[in-house]
Image 1 (cartoon, rainbow, N blue to C red):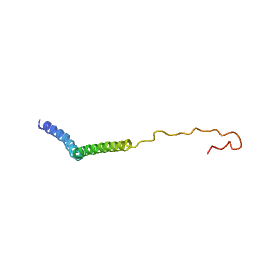
Image 2 (image 1 turned 180 degrees about the vertical axis):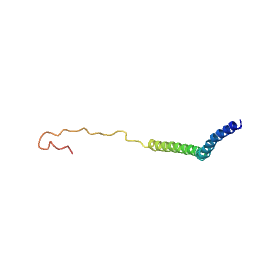
Image 3 (image 1 turned 90 degrees about the vertical axis):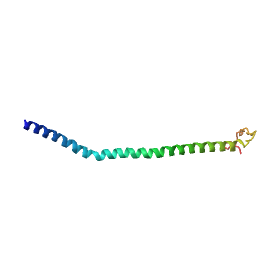
Length: 101
């Protein structure tokens, strides 16, 4: 009976040894992945409000420039009437290949 329990302990020990080795081997990359996720969260927590402030500043600057340009254009009066001359025909003859001056 003792041989049977000792063989069970040996099998159990042989199964636990690779599990422990795998845990030790994979612990570093898993901790690195979790750490990088945490670092990205911290950076995001800092940058997202900053990006929101930049977006609000850009939008307000765009509105300000648009209003300023609108006021500058509204104050200028264009010409009321523009005379457009009618085109004239060149009579056929020696200078008919030229455009009127």
